[in-house]
Amino acid sequence: MSAESGLKTFRDNGGLWEDYNVYEVATPEAWVKNPELVLKFYNERRKQLIKASFNNAHKVVADLEQQFDVIVITQNIDNLHEKAGSKNVVHLHGELMKARCENNEHDTYKLNNEELKLGDLSESGFQLRPHVVWFGEEVPAMDEAIKTIIDAEVFIVIGTSLNVYPAANLIHYLPSNCDKYLIDPKPNEIQLDNSWKIIKETAAKGMVIVQNHLNKKSDSIK
Figure 1 (cartoon, helix red, strand yellow):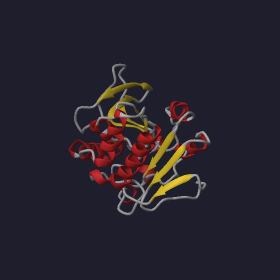
Figure 2 (cartoon, helix red, strand yellow; figure 1 turned 45 degrees about the horizontal axis):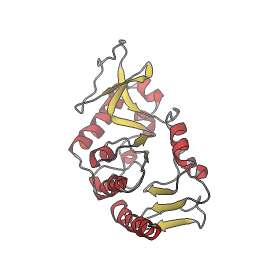
Figure 3 (cartoon, one colour; figure 1 turned 90 degrees about the vertical axis):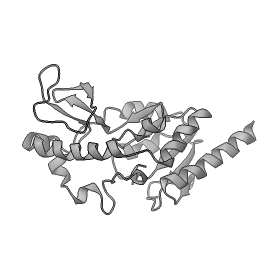
C-alpha cells in the first residue's frame, strides 16, 4: 500500500529484511539484547515516513468514505492512511509515530520527531520503546479487526502476501455474501476461492478500478 509512497516493504526484493536481520531488530529478545540497534532501525523508518506523502491508493480509500462506511485494517505501521484523510484506521501491527512504555503496552505517547533514544522514559519511569508489534508478540487489535469484518459487505485486500499471521486469518471471518477483492501485481491466491476478484495491478491503479466498480454498483442500486 505504501510502496508507491517510497516506503520500503519488508519482504519484496530490496525490502527492509535484506538490510537487517529481523531477529536483531523486531523481536522482544532483540530489544533486551541491543535496544540501541532496535531504536536505530525504527528511527530510520520514522525519518523516512516523516518525509513521505500518501499516494493515490491512500487517497481513493479515504475518498470512499464520502459514499460508504469504510474501516481500514492495516498491517502497515505508517500513518499515510490518516494523512490521506481516512478517519477509521485499525493498526494491527502498531504505529511508527507512537512510543509506548516497555512495562505497559497501554501507556502510549505520540512522537513529533524521528528520534526515540535510550533514556526517553514514560511517566512511570520506564524506557519508551517503539509502539509496534514485534515477532513473537500478540496482536492486540485482532479482536477489533474480526468484529469489524464479520458483517462486511465489501472487503478489499491490498498488496499483502497473505503469509503474515494472524492477520492472514482475517479472510476466514468474512461473510459468504461479501464482495471480495485482492489487489496485487503478483497475487498469492493459494488461500482464495473463485469468489475473489483478482486485480493484478499496483495499489493505486487497482483502487481506481475497485472505486469505479463500487460506484457503478451503487448507482445501479439507486
